[in-house]
Length: 250
Image 1 (cartoon, rainbow, N blue to C red):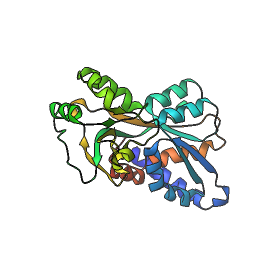
Image 2: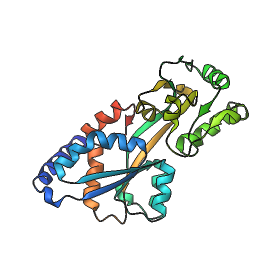
Image 3: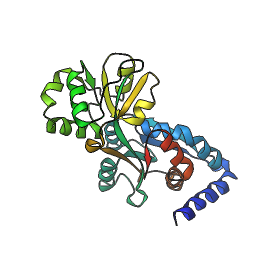
């Protein structure tokens, strides 16, 4: 049945390609991971449909607030619980809800520096305590989890004085620049910055996967085009790109 849906999407896109003049500009609200995938596979969708994709990004929580403030957009790809809240508030169309991808949390250091040991929970804990500085987002799905994790591990108070929490998605950039020793953020974010080295995912026993979920804006004037884009983001072409960026397709 899933293969049939993929074939249907492909046929639909081919048919739409015959009339590019009808193309719309689709405004997509999301975080960096959304931009990474759309930049990779979006041109294929644009060529097939004549639509133009414009991705606006920030920390997912910030993009959610922009939606709540009334900004116009066509499609949101946010963290699952944020998308669900916007559906409850009538900002997104419930029947279009679709999980697109999920990303684990990883650790980054500046490329060329010593790779710390995070191979076990005990080693990860000791690496955090030994680091001169660490950074993770001021707000975000990973932040909610990490705050709870560090409290459970009994190291929250020790880490607090040396922790930098940027309001923007600049964790990997700060590590790459040498401003901070360790960065903790979703893995694709680390992979997107050349001078940031992925040490690896945090240990599986304490790993948390952030799910990114799409839905069409209730006020979008391009409802069908946005629905087509969601279908495309769940197709094999997008799945391959998602995996190449260190994520899992949902």
